[in-house]
Length: 339
Image (tube, rainbow, N blue to C red):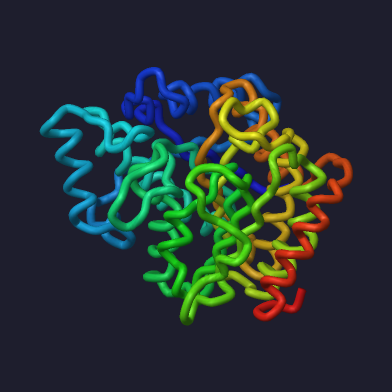
């Protein structure tokens, strides 16, 4: 059994988005659900610290940092775009989100697999733009901090329904970070087609798996087995980060995928096995999307349970269209990886 922890704080509700899918209720809904489960006695709670604003500059421009800070502290909140809101306390809450992921990494020294239950999410935020509900790119900042600490190879697996365009852009030309995304296509933000494989020195270190709407547990299991696992294993990361989005759930109001709790358990266990294989178990997850509160709580529980028990339920078969997609992805990636 793996030791597990959640990094969270009630203060994450201070990012006040009002009547918005990315609502303040998301984190309390998860924690309340976990507290009612028989898994709760086995979960360690860790309070996050606030990141220093300088940490943001590992990924973002000073101009973006200043814009978000001014919008919060001087204007008392404003819409950054049609989807992304900054409230009066959003800048400090975003620093707490970044700090939550960075604090999660420190738990590795104790043999713990952490899940940072944070908001606002981050994987759409680019170097100079907040977008798609995201202010700063929490996971990309964490990956940069690992590189600065001396890590040579960091893998990021993103299972949000929406492609993590900000994370991809952050490492598109680099070979020290492998970014792998499975997501729905077509869907916001319109990036993440299978031929986006990286540029320059980073060519081959971006892997996109654009799933059709309706894809479910068997489909994600297939892409893990035939694409994600062999590539990540060949990369042999020293740490594995997961952008854990739950808008892939079949009950989610935004996405069109059909993943269930069993699918998340399967993906979590496969990520743990990959981390155990080359990274001494250094696996950390950070919350991205997921907007149906009941499904969100159940799915996070399933993820943590799979990590704690190191087992996952059996799931069904993939569709024929996903077999076809896997073959196309393999053809796009075979020049870089032996798959």
